[in-house]
Length: 260
Image 1 (cartoon, rainbow, N blue to C red):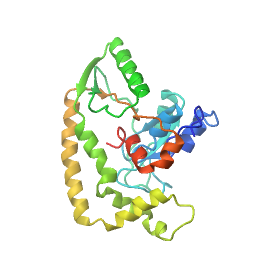
Image 2: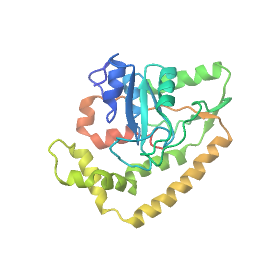
Image 3: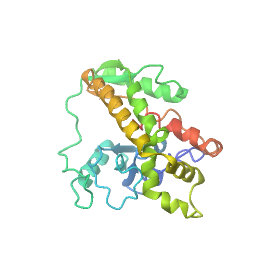
Image 4: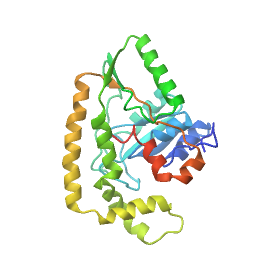
């Protein structure tokens, strides 16, 4: 569970690192993020999680999930500490051909207009999440930022492809053979999702690559109107028993805002 709320999820995947930082057992934690594993645990544990662009931080030593989307991420108690760690870890690594030269900083330039989600996109968020989100929007407005409501359906449509589409075949290519050996400690839900991807075809993947490109073009239009986008990290903070009862459903909801 999360250190401050043991009855609730610590976020899954890289949550051990987030929990260690939250419990003051470490100043910096390292994790991965393919579909939210570097940001959902941060939200659930009350720390900062940063996922850079693909290739910012090399993935040397990381067991791949979807290599096309995998990122190495950091956890810290403050934004400045997390950013400093990210810069220190970033840079080209000969062992990772997708890695990039080290960025000079993590700033995105001057921010004047902030995009926010409309009520339809926020459907399913708990009351506490909505209260926190609206309070943050009000603080941004009070600080002088222009607040612009955006249509983010392309973002969510793209995110849905990561599990509902054929990109999960990358996970099967990465660890499917290992899971087929029936390791006794493998999580049955994860194993079933990955093993089921063996039935997907190259044609399925080709179609989804084209679909993703179309969603990417639509999503890019958002940046014609805003400099940054503000959205909740998760729509809820589930209890552990709720995940046990419906692991796929709960985790799918948790990834809504972070898989695009």
